[in-house]
Length: 598
Image (cartoon, rainbow, N blue to C red; front, side, top):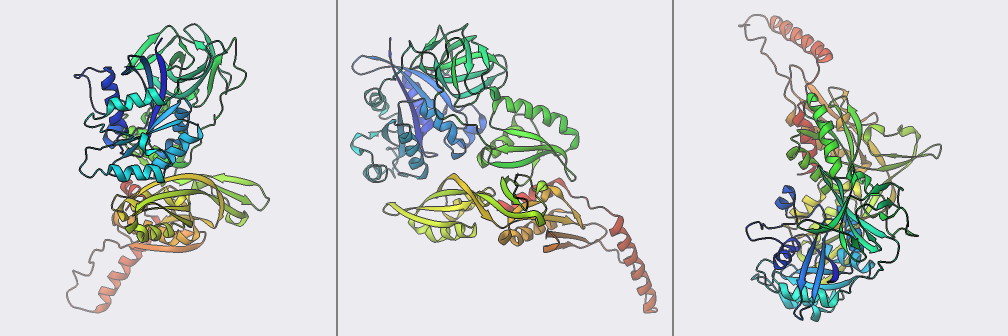
C-alpha cells in the first residue's frame, strides 16, 4: 500500500503555481508529451488566457522517492483569487501541508501573506519554495531574507526551483514526502468526507471532489449530506489522474471523487460533510458555511427577443457554478432580465465573459452594487442590493454600508499616489508596515462600494503595475447614503440609478451625464440629462437639437418675417419635446459603466 501525502500549492497571482503543477504532473508521467499543454489543470479558456485558476482541480501523482519508497501524492490545486477565499480554505482543510511559492524576482507579496495565514489557521506544514531562480532579475538571497523576516519561516529549508525550466522539481517532491506528515484517520470509524469542490458532467451529473478523513466509501453505499440531510446512492468512486480513474473504494486519507446521480452542482455545497446513511458520523467536519454573494448586478439581453436564450444560458451556467445566484428582474429601459449575486468582482467578470463566449449571449450589465443596510423610523432593518428598492428617504433613520480591510503592497516610491487614491475612495485608518527595504504594506479600511467599480485598475495605473491588492470584508458602518437617479428628458432611467455616498454623488452624476451626452444621438429637440438626488439636481448636460435654418429663403425684407418663422419653429420644437421620446442606444448603458473603469 503506497504512503499518502496530501498537499496544496499556494502563491500570489503570477508566481508560477500552475507551471509548477505542470512539472509535477510531467515528472509523475501522467501525460504523454504529445498530449501535454501548459496549465494542464486550468481547463477553461478564460483561465488559460488570464493565467489564473478559477476552478479548483485535483490530481493524484504516483512517486517513488530516492530511498525507493512508493508514495501517492494528492495535489489539490486552489483558486488564486481573493473572491474564492472560502473555496481555498476548504481545499486547505483537506491537506496536511502546503508548498508556499515565492517568486525570486518579485519577493513576498500581499497574497503570499494572506495565503500563509490561511495555511497557519489549519495547522499545516509549510514548505517555502523559491521559484523562477533562472530569471536574470532573480535575487535568491533577498527572497530568503524576506521569507525569514516577513513570513517567519526557516529560509534554510526553502527549496530552490525553476518550474519553467524544470530545475529542482525532484527536490520539491522529496521535500513533500519528507516534511509533510501522512494523513491521520481510521478506516474503522464511520465515514466522514469533506467536499472541497464539485463540477458538472453532462452525462453523469455533479461529480464531487472530496477528502476522506475517516471510514471508506464504495459503489452501492447510501451517502448522506450532513448540512441538508439529502441522501444519494453511490454509482462510482475513484481518483483523478488528469482523467478519472475508477476504484473499488476510497478510504481514510485519500482524495478522490464520488458520482451518485446528483442533478446540479448547487445540490452539493463546498465544505459540507458526507457520511453513510446507515452509520452516520457523530459530528460534521468544522468550517462549513454558505457562500454569500457580495456584489450585485442586473443582466439584460441586448435584444428583448434573446430573453428565452438568456434563461437557458443561465440555467446551464448555474449547473457548473453553485456560487452564482439570480432572480428575475425587469427595467423600464432594458426590459426583462435577471438580478444576479456574485462572490466578488472577478467572479462577476468571469460570469459575464463565460456567458458571452460559451453560451453566445450578448448582454448588458448594470452598475455593480453592494448590499446596503437601512434602519427605518420604526426601527425595522431592510437590506437593499438594488437601487430600485431604495427606501423612502423620509423614513430612513440611518444607512450602513459594508467595509473592507484592504492590504496594498507597493514599492516605496508609489506611497503618495496610493495614499491619495485611497483617500479619494474614503479610505480611513491607514496603517503602514515595512516588510523589507523599499517595499511598503499599507492597510486601509474602505467601503466595499468604492472598490467595486475600478479601484483595482486605478491602483495598477498609479503603481505602474507593481501594486498588489487583497481584501477581506470586516463589518457594516454608518454612512450618509443617497440614491442618485439619472433623468433623460425629465424621465427617470431606472437602469442607471445607483446608491452612492453623498460626498461622491455630484462627481458620479457629472461623469454619468457627460458619458450619456457623448452616447445619445442628437434629436430634433433639445435633450436635458440630469443627475438627481430626491428633488435636487446635482449635475446636468444638454444635447443640443438639430436645427433647420428656416430663414434661409428670406432675402432681405422686413425682420418680422424672419422672426415669425423662428417663433413658429420654436413652438414646433416645444411641442415635439413634450410628445417626443428619446431613443437611448444600448451602448449608452455600457458607456456609463465604462466611465467608472477609466
